[in-house]
Amino acid sequence: MNSSASLEHGYRRLLAFYPRSFRRENEEEILAVLMATAEDGQQRPGLAISADLIRSGVAMRLRPTVPRSAHTVRAAVKLVYLAAVAELALLATVVLTAASARAEVLKIAPAQVSALTVHIVADEVFLPISILLMLWLAWSIGRRQDWARLVLTAYFGLTTLSLLYTLAQGAATVVPADLIAGGVFWFFQFAAVVLIFTPQSARYYQPQPTERQAA
Amino acid sequence: MQEATFLILTSLAEGSQHGYGIINDVTEISAGRVRLRAGTLYTALDRLRVDGLVEVDREEVVEGRLRRYYQLTPDGTKLLAAEAARLHANATAAMRRLSPLGVVT
Image: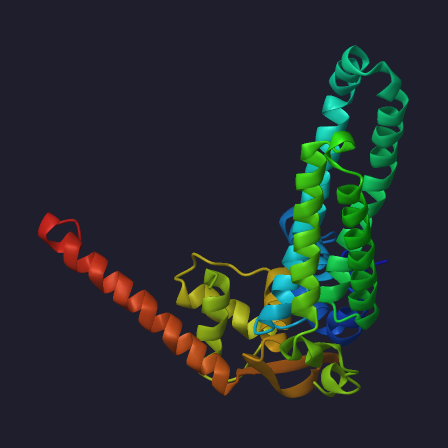
């Protein structure tokens, strides 16, 4: 392989960090620019160029595909990410305070220890799953996936029921931090659901047969 | 607005340009201070196209490779004008306050 072919091969491997749809449309063009800016006889992509391609490619995969003018959708995406952050804070609290909470309950009401353990284990199993689901939904909503709006709404319904159930059980068994985190989580979801079903958001979830291909 | 975005839009204000042309032009506008890398340029161009500020003017095939020319949309021109006016007003205010101190050359 001569040096220019090996350099091109190296650039193509780096361009794989970009989304496929973007590559289909732009790979040859970027490659032409990369080759034009390379040094004579250069065999491999430089470190700075490689880092830039990887960073840009990953950023393009992660960022929303709705325009900046889609304020309602973008706000909803942020709220769903915030919901994930609220859950992460709750998970950290549960993990860090598990031992001391158990000791406390053992002193005051030993009979409740097993109930508390079940509660803690349930949180430690359920919260990471829910955090991942929230991150995935936030990403998908920003990328115009209509199903993600529906899944978020269904999840919001479950959150509402679980919050009502917790409240109905009464204050005796509810940890205040749990209730506050649950309320914050509920509110972020509620605001996001309202935002993604406004008429301003709806147009970004219509089928878009020719928009990008036409460009 | 990020400086790279501002300079890309400024480069296109003079007429349509292809990617390599934008990189060279931005280097020139910024007196060599900003050297755009291809990854940064095309990520910014994709964003600007989605936001309706830049569009493809025409395509050519040069030495077997596709070459696209980009141009500002009316919205892009408007945004660049507003951003330039904002920066200009800020810079003017700074210059006015610095001149009695004798540090402006």
